[in-house]
Image 1: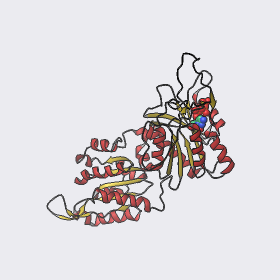
Image 2 (image 1 turned 180 degrees about the vertical axis):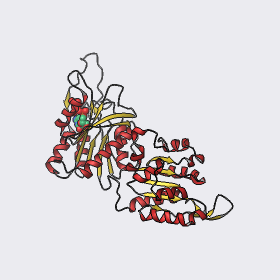
Image 3 (image 1 turned 90 degrees about the horizontal axis):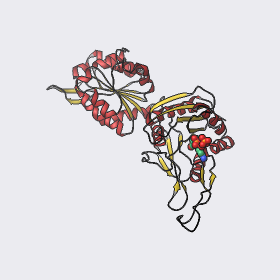
Image 4 (image 1 turned 135 degrees about the horizontal axis):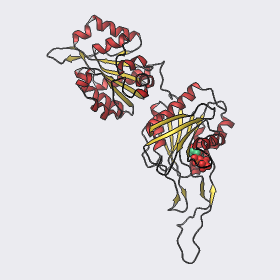
Length: 412
Ligand code: CTP
């Protein structure tokens, strides 16, 4: 999930570091938005280091990203902790003076406030009215815990424990009948890594694919609520938790696994680098170098195009099912045409619904952590660009896939 964690200006801000940890360790992508006042208690460096994301509380930072609109819009959940009396008042009256209050006004998903303040502030009629207003609008406002407060006194006003806020946040997301993760109830099959085509018991023909993109896609799909099946060819990175992993070696094994998995998948993403050719013969014994015979010549035969077969299978047996078939293309331009022209031709040839196009050179894409892609659609919508880390690019691809599934009428 994408979570926005708003931090208010109270002494309890330091406890929110543990809450942030709980979210990130559960695999969520968290953007922290501290109020100006809260940075007197905990600095932005702490939030950046713990979340792994940039942190700002100004609407004037990174204006080109339109963060004051985007962050709330894209968040699956917004949590405000500690929610001070001031923040509750601002949220209740719809103020938009900083990035956090803007984000609250733009939030589409569930919003949870975890208040912390002095008992008299919490019990003041103004705060009571603000809390009622927020609850009336559908936000969840937790009751503060009772106990020792900042001074010598005690009473209700303590920030609930991080684990309690975490549990309440997860329960809130699940309980929202009007809110669902974009891929909830969907099955997504993703092929990743590079196939290996054996020559003999010790040698194979392989490729440079690291599997990073496929794994990042699997994580993004899982976080979007999907049941994920990862068809893992050779990968240099471990498979992520929370996905069903099926290991494959060769293109033919991948073909069999993909066609079988497609039977009950809503989405199939072919991000694996599949060998186009395999040795015509695989020797049972190690091929030896010998002085008395000529050096061996390897004859290759074509592997079937799995992506194309997936489209054919969908069109033949699942027409109208809405199944989405997504291909990847690693393209280089040359004197005959540019990358996009080649990619458009490949999209038409393969017949898949979306084609994610990487522009490759020897130093680009394979094994790298960042990426720049263009998403082409057979239906003919404008090419969509996405760039950033492989995680960010994968999230953009999964958002596009969710949009196609949820808002575009069935294909083929
Ligand atoms: N693919 C596939 N089966 C193959 C080869 C490729 O399913 N035998 C899939 C890849 O997983 C990817 C897409 O097809 O999603 C594009 O692969 P690519 O190698 O870029 O294209 P090719 O069809 O091999 O075309 P060319 O080599 O002519 O560029």
